[in-house]
Length: 388
Ligand SMILES: Cc1cc2nc3c(=O)[nH]c(=O)nc-3n(C[C@H](O)[C@H](O)[C@H](O)COP(=O)(O)OP(=O)(O)OC[C@H]3O[C@@H](n4cnc5c(N)ncnc54)[C@H](O)[C@@H]3O)c2cc1C
Image (cartoon, rainbow, N blue to C red; front, side, top):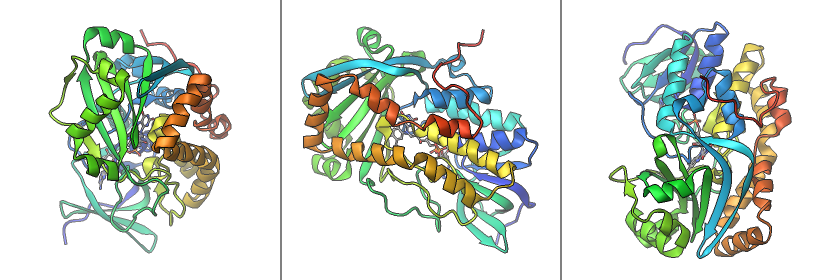
């Protein structure tokens, strides 16, 4: 049995968006917070890196302006499948910033607010005895805490596995590219969504004109086809628009980042006194571009309710009520577009009514009244300008 650190008031497990946001809010309110993050340095994550206005507002409230970090602006959406392309404007202005930059900015902010951040600390197990939590670290040490916020993202902590989800058979990939300059210009201000057999993805610029390609594919299709190289070749073969975009492009990494068994559709049910935030609370299908705003919202709500003396169960109940409709709609759409009939329906339907893409984008976001209920946002449509 290894050493035990002194008991802490608030322990946050995971220093992604949700963990850092909880830590920032609790530390700002003067609470003692310790955060354990597995990685010892900033790193890339599988993510489309599309920041909705709600996410941007939550970041701004913590003093982080993504535009100051080099974020690209997104005003339009273009959908392609086989030979067809449909485009329209988004009903809001969004931003796009790499997770490498964004997560590091948030974690640094948490540290600056007074949170004790321990990087390179992997939690292997979490137990509760007599209302006191104990987190066992890989190093052999353990940390005891009165309150725990579980913010370890998509992967489960042993003993706290999430239930089977309605669309848990997708594998995600992400790769950064340097596009040909003419293609970079054509991509500017667009999020380009593309459909291919058994999957879908997105391409957009992040800071420094780097293009982020992120996609999900059914595991069975990936197995059938062979692997990443075969998948990329078959996507380019299938989708003329994507092929043109990547013509002459240079991949910036040797191989893509990958994540398997994404628990899409997960909405936390029973927290047993544990404050589940971010992907531990809810995992919405990626095409909505709303996962990060849900992560930040759930974290802000959890911190606010904890500070107000409410319980993890009350928080969970409220979050569930706020998100369940959005989650059901997004998961049903995601399950549809990975089928061949759904893919055809999507592209033909949207060719006839491109504005439906705006309606879908608007209906798969956190309801505004939920944001107002947590007294956090007055108006979430406008992106504040870059600070001078
Ligand atoms: C393919 C794909 C595309 C997406 N695209 C978008 C998009 O374009 N826009 C959008 O808004 N959302 C998108 N999302 C969703 C978004 O990425 C997540 O919702 C968001 O990252 C959740 O934040 P989090 O803080 O809960 O988890 P994470 O960001 O995953 O952070 C979890 C943190 O916990 C740490 N950790 C894990 N295990 C341990 C442990 N045992 N001990 C200590 N630390 C640990 C990890 O290192 C990590 O830093 C996408 C998701 C996928 C899969």
